[in-house]
Image 1: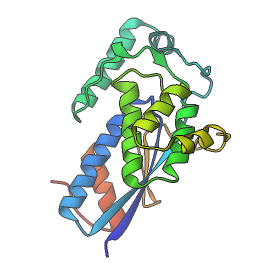
Image 2: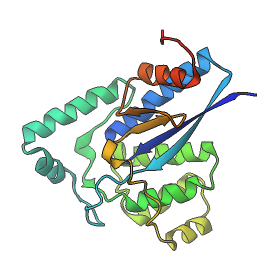
Image 3: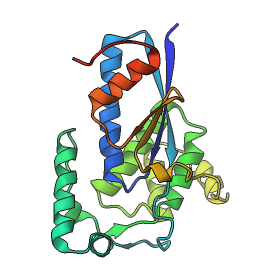
Image 4: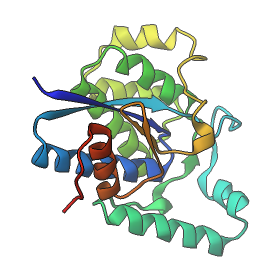
Length: 217
């Protein structure tokens, strides 16, 4: 029987560092599978809505970052930094395609409800599709119609979705980790890693949690 290693990940769909961190986690998990196949990693995803103050329809993407960073030069520098970090893990980001900074409350509500009844494979498919919907296809994932279509594409049942939209979503978003920023990883309930850390660092932290004294090669 394999040894189970639980990893809790706190994230928001609009955070590019969360997508980058997801790729780093995948690389770290692959390393663990290679060197320690006796260990089974179990990832639990927890949505954190960072921008709770956004209107339901979101705000213009460019306007949001200009207000946040103060100048177009600062925006371009920040986006280039993110693009390079994403490129290093095989993710191509084109911020010019994104038009809306969405309110992610409904996206987290949908994900939390479906995640609770899904297999790990279904959860992974939905999570990837929501990330790609925002960062690659410039879809407004704050809109219920868009989210509904994405869930159907991922194989979820229309009646399930109807029931989800009829339920309140106040308890579906994990805000209590927002103070740490996202992504935020808790490995085996004991070891915390903040930010999109390199896969080698995540791997070493996994080994520490398992009591394995090893440096990633």
